[in-house]
Structure formats: C-alpha cells, structure tokens
Length: 168
Image (tube, rainbow, N blue to C red; front, side, top):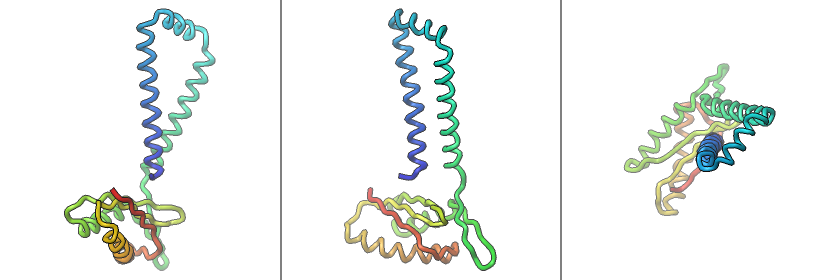
C-alpha cells in the first residue's frame, strides 16, 4: 500500500472516531442527568485538561494537514540528458501507462499507478485482471521489455525501474 493511502486512511479513521465518540457522548448526555451534571462540572472546573486536549488535537490536525499537503504535491522524475536536466511530471508517465495497458488489455480496465522513490527510481504498480498463471508470467516478461523501450523512447528514462504486479 502506498504511503499516501496509509495517511489518508489514518486521517479518515481519526475523524470518524472523533465524530462517533461525540455522537455517543451527546446521546449519553440526553439520557442521564447525573452524567449531564458531571459534564457541566467538568466544563466549569478543569480548564487545564481542556487546554491539553486542545493542543493535542491541534498538533494532530496540523500533522495530518502537512501529510495531506505532501501527498498532493506533484512528483517529478529528473532525467539528466547531456548537459541539461529534464523534469517529467508523474501524470505524464501515468498517461503513457494508461495507453499502454489499454493496448494490452483492450476489454479490461487495468489499474496502474506510478511511484517515484529516492533517488529518482521509478516504480510502476499494476493490478492484473484474472488470468492463467502461465499467461501472467509470459505477459510480465513482455511488459518489462516493452515498458523499458516505452520509457526510453518517450521520456528518455533508460535506468532500471521496478514493476510491481498484484492480482485482482
């Protein structure tokens, strides 16, 4: 799982948990007058506890915002070509891959993704449709060669790349 998915899942889990806990608290406050009185006393007397909770929530919120901002930054692959360097947006690579997989699997929608790892290592992530294992092995070998040629011709990327395959 990509780290972007993990962070998004963690943020989603955090928000859902807070909302559910608040909902349960207010339902309990409606039903129990003793709990309402205790909650009112807590609100009136424990200022420092609320400050700690507030600071913790602000820190978690800022960390989640920074993480989501980092995930939404465009990732670029830097290629050194002669004396100059070229930046290639991740979206351009994804577009070429979408066309390539549409040619290989015309009747199926193949999920693919691109990850750029440090230092400038390209990973192509593909989710294969259901097929016979023997056909998969042949197809992976073919894809390694064709993707290498595609990346070299279209983008000038002639380095080693990672090909990650998952089955549906």
